[in-house]
Structures are given as structure tokens and as C-alpha cells.
Figure 1 (cartoon, helix red, strand yellow):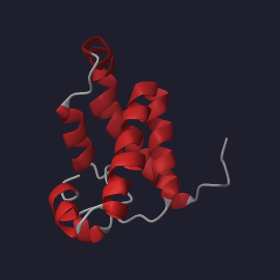
Figure 2: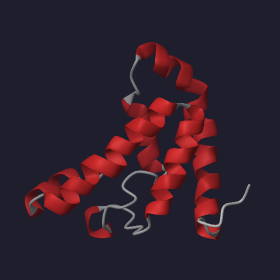
Figure 3: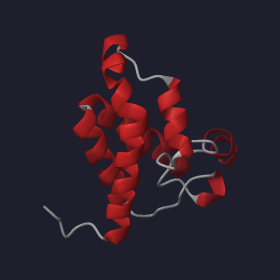
Length: 116
């Protein structure tokens, strides 16, 4: 079912997220559950795919998307694979990074945001 809240850019992003998940996440998701941890490799690969730091300004190495719907697409697709993935990603995307952007000193932003 197509939802009117998303446009073509969001759906193209959804397709790239699905490809990333099928290639890099789904084959390992059972092991993540057994280990009760999401390995660092997940986060590194997510960064390479450009799905981290969506709301972080470009000057700090983020995508500067300025459109929360991209975060929603990412959370939806991760949650289809495993609810814990969506939750963990949400802590990064919706809590940690935005607080550093909004409340961090310039020194903290320069230290912690690039590479996210």
C-alpha cells in the first residue's frame, strides 16, 4: 500500500535501505539475537551506505536531510527485520545525534559527529 506521506525520494531511499538490509543485515540477524548485541560492523556498514547521520548537518559529515521522513523509512525497514534493530538505530538517529547537534559545544560537535 502506497502512503501519501512519502514521495519518490523517500521510496528510492527505502529501496536502497532494503538492499543494504538484504545484503548486510538479514544474513546475520539471528546471530545478533544470540549474541544479544549488534556488532560494530553493522554500524560501520550502515555509515558506508549513508544511512547514519541523516539529520546531522553536512558541515559535520552528516546527510543534512532536514526531513524526518527519511528517519521514519529507515526505522520502518529495520523494524521489519528485527524490532531491536529499529530501536537501536532510533537511539542513534533520534536521541544521541540530535542532542549533540542541538546542545553540544562546537568542540563536541567536531569530535563526535563526523564519521557518524
